[in-house]
Length: 258
Image (tube, rainbow, N blue to C red; front, side, top):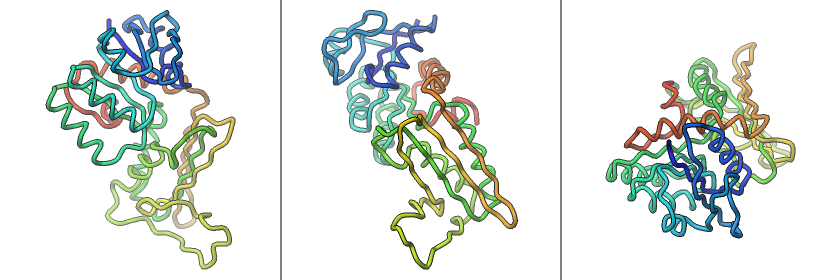
């Protein structure tokens, strides 16, 4: 039985993770964390503390699932990894230096950490397929849309898809530079020649659409997360896989073998 704590347990993703963990016979939901907790309890009656230090004084989980933000995740890594507590995180916005720090801590303490921009299997396949298609087309646009409360743009998944599309290319994608941009920013952001457009609105969970363009043709791939349940098989897989690891793993694709 893997004892699992959830960081961000009262959030939309965190509460969904709590339910998924509680439903799995190989996992045990333990005392968890949420900065907004007011002596709240998890669905199985465990305490939800305001911070990791208080949680660690009262329990020691085998693994912590984190869906918060960059700052909270890094604080978690610095506190949990030296104690041998493994982490599965979907927090985005990390910088290259953050990944380097996490990897060094994992190597030093022989502790597994998984950081993934997306846990939906379809989204991971979209990244993989984009890496294949990218070298066959010269133009590409990427449109991502999320719920209105998402704090970063573009999404971490969009960045991962754009990087995947460019992965097997020898040069940047060709871009259309308009002579007149009537509304500034209409062509979106630019990452390696990939034009990225972000939408934020109620009714969405997460949607990513990549459109490759070539002579006389376009090639479009779309992944929709209709509900947050779409992420749970990947989260549960991540928990069970990283529990056996002693290193840093960046992205669910590595655990899927693609």
